[in-house]
Length: 271
Image 1 (cartoon, rainbow, N blue to C red):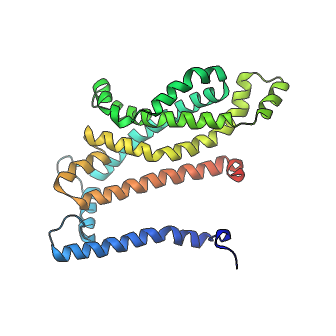
Image 2: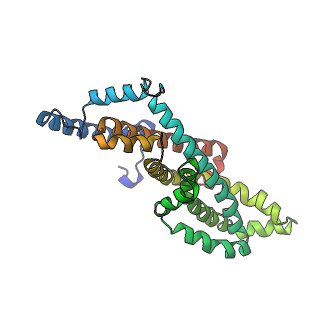
Image 3: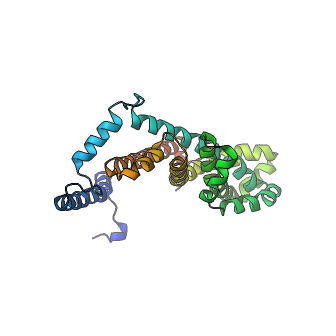
């Protein structure tokens, strides 16, 4: 008999084991909800499934009486736009600066201390400063995401660039390659799949900064809606929104993973 450390689940087993925790959580919620509603039918902390259904239908499939728009759709598009712009700009800055600091010692000596210092500043602590400087519009929310995850991306990609074997760089120099050719033909191709991995790891933080910014100053967005209805203890809206945010985050992570596996199969094969 195989030892437990050597046993692996097949495709069906992986799906079953992956879904099992969610099923357990759902069962525990239903049991706790039934118990609370039996004691107090007006309890709002753990709503029934029918309350969730009504709230989802109202937010997602019925136009708002005030604006005529579908609330969930508007909130989702607003949040995804802010997230997409912030993550894209952060990835571009992280890629350029990370390669430069990881490949060029002089650049690393001048920039790395600044990046390290920025990475130690809690981004939420400077949120009021961002609103003062950039106003309450979209720019402040995007800037919070950029300031929050860019230092992490730079430091991670710098480390990855430094791990490239020195032998490869020496061989390219021996063949007559200049600095630009070494960066574009050696460093860049090896860093790109690692960039996707770093972005996947930073998505959780990006969502956190986005929700925090929307909760303070926004007129639409997933975070704005959650903090808007919390004053009414509307858990029938809050919990579906949290579940929807979780699904969107998982979908983005899954898409990046699949793209990385398709575009850079050698990287995942080596792992």
